[in-house]
Amino acid sequence: METYRTEDYHTAGEPFRIVVEGAPDLPGVTVGDRRAAAVEDPTAQRVRAILCSEPRGHADMYGGFITPPDDEDGDFGVLFWHKDGFSTACGHGTIALGVWAVESGRIPRQDSGTREVVIDVPSGRVRARVRFEGGEVADVTFVNVPSWVQATGLPVVTSHGPVTVDVAFGGAMYAVLPAAAVGLDVVPGDYNALISVGREIRDQLNDSGVIAHPDDERLSDVYGTIFTAPGSSGEPHHHRNVTVFADGEVDRSPCGSGTAARLAHLVLLGEFGPDDELRHESIIGTTFTGRVVGETTLHGRRAVLPEVTGTAYRVGSSEFTIDPRDDLVPGFVLR
Image (tube, rainbow, N blue to C red):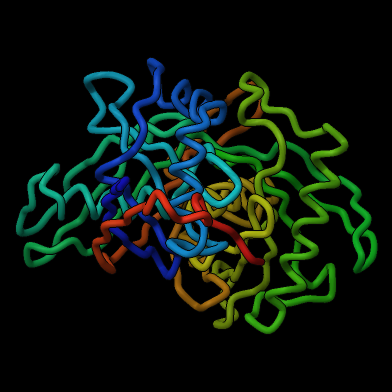
């Protein structure tokens, strides 16, 4: 029988399955190269589908294969995956990996203070700062790749009427618009409608071919749609959001890379300053905090360096087996 071992975490409610045994060995100098190889590799796609699909996973499962880092300055790399393929960035996964790095013994535990974990992801190098209290991980803060606004005021016709959306990059491209623009709210009761409209917006923008990364075509196209709403406290820097990504997956967390994109978006709109802190709330009420820790110019655009803080918790260890007689391998997905 085939066997795969995983350590499972959740970050603010969003699952992250770390494959510690059975991940395919993929060629490439960088994690970006390995992602490109994985997309074309039948074995990698099969293992991803086995661990993501039912009966071992579900339509909103998320996880990653651990890889070598891009160079000796990194601690490790990761290939992020979901039910539809391999993604370029994952903030909630980065937070989970920071906790896992300590709990697995890869990074030494300490009583207090912080320790940095350097993680290479397909969109670049991410530094996660693990903070300790009483010898346990209190939270993880990561400085994301430079993030910017790619486009503003793009017209999209949806089943809820015409809207205009902006597109921001936070390791992946996200369409951003208020949920109220399509007559919805960031609440569980609108879950199915948000999925439907999120798909429409993503597909229409991608079919138009207007969203191209300035220097890496692998990072082009809209990955997800971020629906925004005011936070329940009414405070100016408290926002709610839900990110519908890939083919209709819904992030239970506030979305780490989406939070980075949202920070860049708020800065450009003039709604956020260098000393402000964003309280970013998810559709289930969990939160990340975000700040801008620097600015730069990239590809001729104003870009920010976003910092996102959250925490993750281990929910279990699994050993998955594949019976060669099982005709449902690699699995199925119901949405």
